[in-house]
Length: 222
Image (cartoon, rainbow, N blue to C red):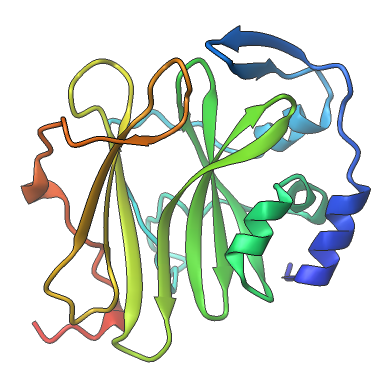
């Protein structure tokens, strides 16, 4: 099912959320205990929970039906898409495409939800948490934007516990096109007091294992 930005705006404006969530605080950020039968419980229920230890998050521009792609997900309906924050659609910048409930992974006293968007000009995977009975955007984990064959801007992420403190860290690499020999590298931790990703230079990252997903449309010369 495809959506235009006008359709999404109308859905966002008319969406009604539960008014009395049951929450428990964690250092200023709240984890919502979703009410049985609430819109958010139904929304969260379409994501398959996965136990991960070293998860490579990437966009595959053409998912083969026989391919094992962990982020294939379940296509989201209009009501489920309308729950996503309006600022996310503004940042997405696409005129139409499909949204998929890709995966739910463990966060700090909550699940974190990965939503995959696939449009005509590329794809993207974003991470959300449910706070105060609504999804909030935490981080863009992956994208693949191809203006022309061989000129694909790419972001990949790895979710893993680098320092073995039982909380996940986030490693990201990006490049402007397939011919780039240089890549940007960023590492993030999620402090328990904020539960927001914060960049750090204090982790000893195993960079030899952090590589881009090699996709056919990138037209590698090697």
